[in-house]
Picture 1: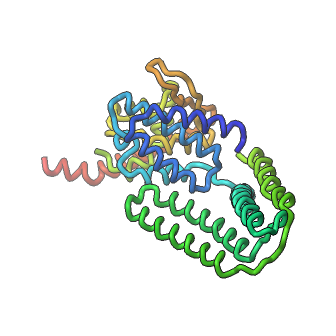
Picture 2: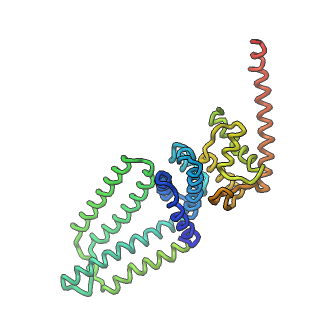
Length: 215
Length: 115
């Protein structure tokens, strides 16, 4: 994220600690809902600051979140989001690419570590084997992470029913990934460990570059 | 109590009018509206409207330390907002006198007949 967004995010994180437990819980639900919305991270943090200050002011007057915001937090969030310009298609696409770069870098790092370990044990060092299952499960994990993020955001005010749906979704993805890794063992390529190590580093560098450009 | 649907059409203009009096912040706007007889309006109802007015360039906001403690977002009218406020009052007065004339011609007359 840009420097200004990063600064405001840190300020919000810091100031949020001063709220009482109930207001913190309400604000967390609101922020989770905002995170899954179609507004830029900069605007998310601006709205978060405004709502945090409304809650802090209310707290100082002895009012709870419902008295300040109203009883329906989701309706409040929707009315706020309706007044904020959404991200353009280009911004959304770049945001998606950025998130995928980070996710892929993390997965490649984990795979590099486990691959290097098994290669050393099997005597294949310094070459790593990438299977079809590795690629398929990585794609599924990335898709699953995006789906989970959306479900968590939309279910921010959903209570236990949303939690159960989330658990079922998580379990389903975990099972599918385990099956793909187990059944698709055909080797696709063998790469030198140094070349493999460059992949997550390059992905991370591309992520950092893009993240600084995006608000 | 004024029904929400009826309030919706005029709340933007009334918020502009309150801000037009002096630079102010969300909670104070809600309190001032209550003082004028609009009933209790949560700050959460006012906030999205402030965002809309700000987005439309009718008001602008600055963050300042308040006398009472925490930093607050203070709103003031822009030149475009003053123009919009004048237009709001012109439209409102036209609507109000039309509704008043209708009331006089219907309900007002029946009130006179019953007395």
